[in-house]
Image 1 (cartoon, helix red, strand yellow):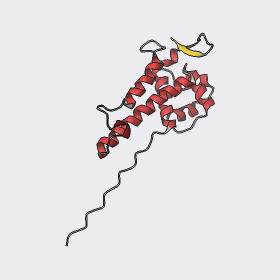
Image 2 (image 1 turned 180 degrees about the vertical axis):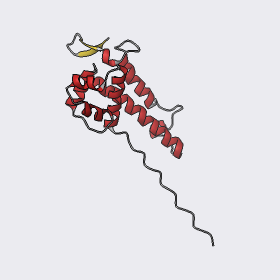
Image 3 (image 1 turned 60 degrees about the horizontal axis):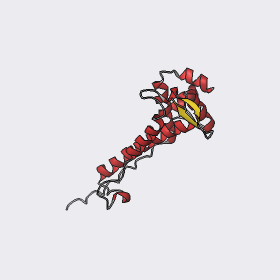
Image 4 (image 1 turned 90 degrees about the horizontal axis):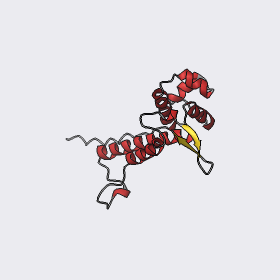
Amino acid sequence: MTAAPAPPVPARPVREPLWRHVIGEVLRRERLAQERTLKDVADDARISMPYLSELERGRKEASSEVLAAAARALGLGLADLLALAQAELIRRTEARTVRIRSGFGLSPAPADLGRGRATASADDAAEAVLRSVSEVRPRNQSLGSATRAATPRGTMCLAA
C-alpha cells in the first residue's frame, strides 16, 4: 500500500509593507543623511525623542500634524516626505511582486500580456518620483537642506 501524496502546501501570504514602517524608514534615512541626532530633530519638531524614535522604527502611527512637524524639522515639506515614502513603497512592492512571480511561477500581470516588452516597472516609477524631488536640489545633498521658494503663481516649491 502506498501513502497518499501530501497536499500542496499553500504559499505563505506575502505581507504588504505597512505605511508606518515606510514613513519611519524615510524619516530615519533623511535624519541620518543630515547627520542629526534624534534629540535635535525631535526638539525642532516639538515632539518627544522617544516618540520620534518609535515613529522611525514603525512602532507608532503618526498624525498628519506630527508627520508635517517631523518633515519640517528635516527641512522637508509634507509632500516631499510623502513622495519619498511613495518611491520607497513602489520599490518594495515591485521587489515583492518580482519575487512572487519568479518564485512561485505565476503568470505575468494582465497589463504585461500581449506586449513585446514588459510595462515600465515600479522601479522606474520610483526613480521618476525621486528624480522629480531631487531635480530641485543639487546632487549629493539631502532634501533637508532644500529651502522653500514661491513660484510666480504663489504656490510653493523646493529650491536649492
